[in-house]
Image (cartoon, rainbow, N blue to C red; front, side, top):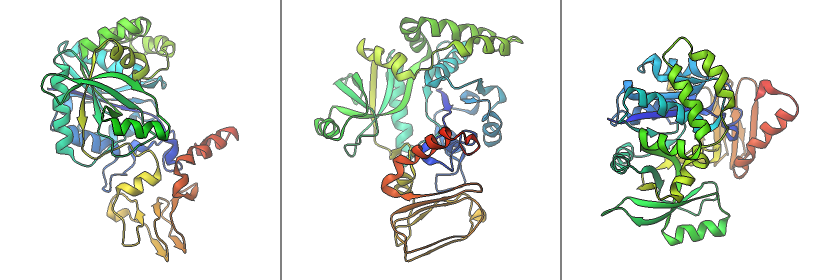
Length: 365
């Protein structure tokens, strides 16, 4: 049975002011139901694993909220990192902890803040990735591109493995310009890189040791102390010395160059909910194209939209939100901040967070 690891970090700056450093997007119900993105992630992994084999890696400031939302997980399966060190340290720590429980384990890493339209197809795709992992490959799930997207990284693929649909990954590509993205999609050789990984823990840790021996040594020291009274002391000493680097850069790019990375194509309605415009495209709209994002129905505040269309409205303060003659806009109302912008500027919301940081207004960030 698969060990599922869910890295739950980041602040989702394009979803400000809803998503904050202390209350990031994966804790919010943006799924069209009362479930948070994190809870929805655990739910769709249920056919693939069990609670005792599901681990979440999160920060100190989020650990209590994660535990409250995931009461079915054993307490020891919430791994708390003292500070953000990017995905390689988080995933590497989880791999070390799993290896001590089961040295032959297959592990998958799945982001806490994605939406999936077809959970059954998703589970089938992950099972195919497990097949590749059992052959010793570091597997990714490649999303079949539906448009020339410039906001995602891409996987450049080579030949099929066996009878398919698995393919070798030749290279990880950075986010391209529009013309390059068009050429990627038209070639049929590229998938979106969704940041979903499946591998045998021994294969991943061997590759980590080959490419990043210092990180491997540091994580080994932490893992050796994990179930001892020395855990906090060793974490405090070693964790700040680990490089801040993503698993893509630290391990996967070099592994692909060595012919050790495979992928399976996924077509299950994946989205990373990167901004409010995208969220509006994913959730049901009324006859005028307006999307009101709420959690449980009993919490729904008042919303009055008159002669308005194409809106994405997040009423989170309990106040009445009313619009008149407003079109193709985003309106986010939280208890301490209101943000309004055109939908086509949704990617620029992070600039507001940057400005607040410049002003020292950390309480809003």
